[in-house]
Length: 140
Image (cartoon, rainbow, N blue to C red; front, side, top):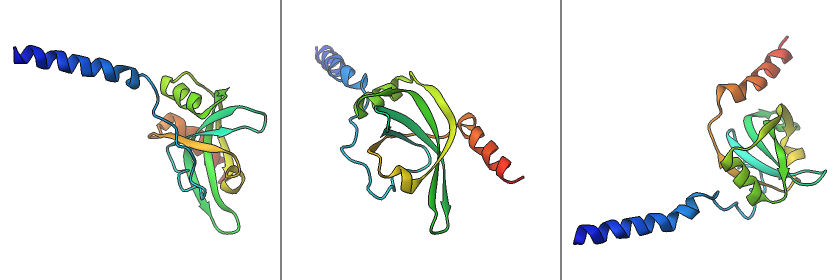
C-alpha cells in the first residue's frame, strides 16, 4: 500500500512540475551595468533601434587596448519579438534563423541598449567559423 501511495505522490509531483518545464526560466530584471555578463557563450536579448527585441549569441570577446576597449563578436537571429520573456521562450524552442552569422560591436556602443542575458551556452564549431574567417581575412 505504501508503494502505491509513493507512486501516486511521485506522479502528482511530476504533473505539477511539467508545465514549469515547458517554459523558459524567468528573465533577469536587469543586466550588469558594466557589461561583465557579456561573455563568450552568452545569449543576449537586446532592444533594437527600429523596435522589438533581437537575440544575439556572443561567440568571441576581444579585449583591445585603451581607448578601444572590448569588441563583441556575435551572431544575430530573426525573428524579433516584443518582450525579453518572449525572447527567452523563442530561444528555448529553437525557432530562430540566423539573420547575420558574424557581426562585431564595440561594448561601449552596445551597453546603452536595454539588454538581458537569457542563457549561456557552449559555442559550436559551426557558430565560431564565421568569426574565424573574419579574423583570417584581417591577417592578410
